Length: 505
Image (cartoon, rainbow, N blue to C red; front, side, top):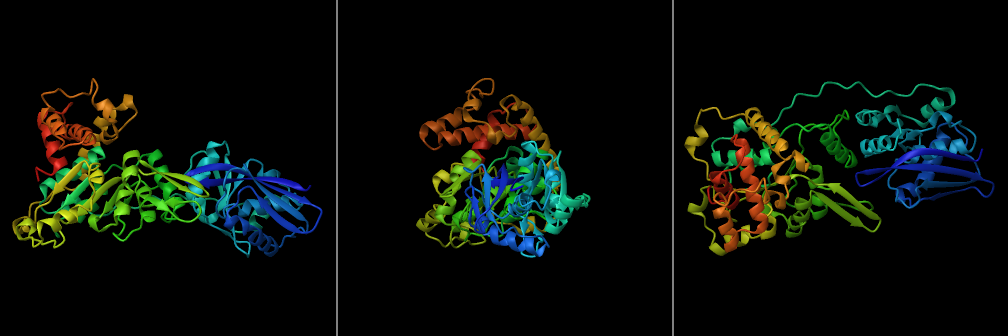
């Protein structure tokens, strides 16, 4: 037999595609040719595979070897094809009977000694294989726990090429995924630790309940960072589909926690203000990798000292915030990643950042305007809540009253989200922040004119954009949900305007 075929999976962005690895061995001068749009890592596979095969005690066929990866029009990236190439090559040379691997997807990188190394992105690869009808996969032992979270797929692990050869040839057992231990107890910052700042706590709860973006502006020590870091603690745990999506993104980035469990807690990303555009929205050579906004998908992207970020990095967020996805185009292809993160900005009101606040600010008015002006109007127009925090007072800092805990606030957030999900079920939406403006402005969801008179006046005067109009309405629905009302009232719209413009803080 001079031809063999083994299944593998290629990954473009977060989307996996079933790939057939073909091996043809023909008479002629010994050579290895790889076709099917391979990248540099795949071109180098010929040397890795040859050393791994020989060092695993197998005979290398001295023939002309052609390796083809189908579909040939799909770009192939990474080293996850090594193990499938080695097995297809041994099958084509007659060394291995490949019947035991019929309908089995094989993933893994080979070391020169024949060891099978873990690879990135195994979770979305296995999920794509399952969607294509594959029910058995063989992955590196280090990725077995991660792959096992995909339902309906029998996962087995290998640590060496020799073990896989013994399984195919003699039926020797492979490595089973480790038992799924109970998840560790959730620990982290608690909202009860935040002193004072009632308006800030209210804004944080509204942001969590409706999925709204939030800006916190105030002097140093006012609690901006403390509030932002506690937003994930009042967000609901991720459901199965969302957890798979988030875990897949972290798998692609190589940031999956040890143990391979699904990520159930909403992620929190807080890049430094020196972060580049590529690290924020995604990028890199070859196929673009997910950035911080994608790694914060279904969670929180926190930009502390937001005016210190580069203008390009901040402006690059505008489109992902609007669409909930980011498309990264490169010469080798385009990758699209989810980017449905809640953005939280924190900023001092001026360059001097006097802890006493505006009363003792030493900056001239022009310097203050220029500093916050680094946050452009189009970016701020996408922020639903803009809260100005006041300096902390001694009485607030030293009070002994117990504040509401994250668990207590999270209970109200869950109830508000459930109310919104029931209301918007016919639209296929779950959060108020997701509702398109046209749906909010038509019956039966259109609010009466008497309740939106001030809002319409602000739109006509130009102090509020059309986007801002819709965002105020969405925020008013969230206020009503949290307070247990079926529909927003005039007072809810007024509070939403004050929180949107920062006038009520």
